[in-house]
Image 1 (cartoon, one colour):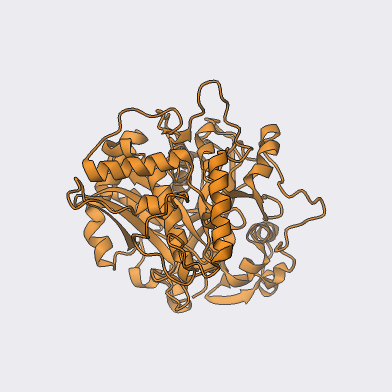
Image 2: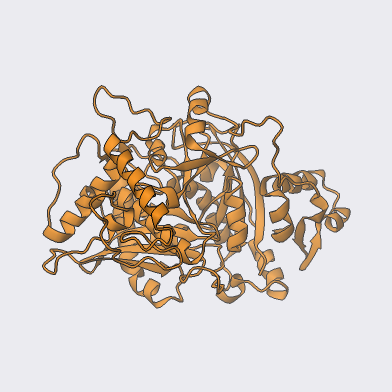
Length: 514
């Protein structure tokens, strides 16, 4: 099944929740009726991101707050001192019911946050989008087999409204309480400004331990050393405890055995986003109630803005087609809810996409009553560990995408704390280590990170005539389609789309034209 998209074009001059600019935002968007995981992987590697079925790309050199795609490298990830504190705090709570009092100076803080999305719905008045989905649905019934066919069609007005609201939600999904919980910064100690452009400081003792560990590994290349994972085996749920002479791994800290007399029972369940899945269906009501509680407490959303329709549209509706190839991860590819269950009730849900090369974080909502557990940081660390676990069976799946990094917005800089990480160059679409990008971002909000002045976007649209179009119930190359067109604005829109998605995606995805 090919991806089927409807390009909506450029939207400029609308409200930005990051800097409160009334009309500073600029982005291009498309409605994805269905999308393969490979196409979405290639699109996020070109700076796109989804909100429900609406897929959008900020216009980086125009928008008021440039949003750079950020990815963490889990295979090299080492939890920082503050990350370890969050994991230990969770273990203490589960084992003994202990609740930490107050925040330590060097632990992620949870400052009160002004709502970044309060005026999003003003967008509805500013944008005049007509989405001819009914016609498309009729065409699809006859030619392209799609999910839409099975589910039946909503009215045109409903679908159009859905598109507009998806644009509003794009900011909620990457707003000040962003995909990974935000409200989380590592606070520098008084008098000591934390320099994010430098790697975290390491004590001499840690460096000595690391040297010793590498020496042991060289002596024992088979990797049978206790505490080391053998590459070809999936990590066990409770890996052996690290010896005292080597730092504890992320897995050691997460999966430490709890005593039989533990105060709380805790489990993490991965549930496919599908109303055909019994587990998703049976937990839907509880998950939805948690979302409402979270949106109202953290984002001060009025009840009518966090109803079942909104929840389903933005966090349960995904264009991604689930795939289960034999070489892929056991859970398959697609969209999932990672549910955190405490004593038989859901206290947090991480919405994620499992893609060919990465786990991509979409959103997190949690029970505000458990804010003391720093669930945003905890869930990000769990997702990094989950990526490492999937990598064991599927070696090319080795990155954790955290959405957008916005250097000009202090609330969003916390994402740079998960090292090592890379930012995507907005011109050549290559990944550059964040340490190399930060000095440039201090001088200018918009930056080209690729230092090679000769470098270009390797997958730029070179042959637009090969782009695939879905028109009048038929699939045809753009070269054939354009001969039937007289409207000059039509060519401009298609070429803009081609330049944004790149040559590879333009030849695989079907662009709906009416």
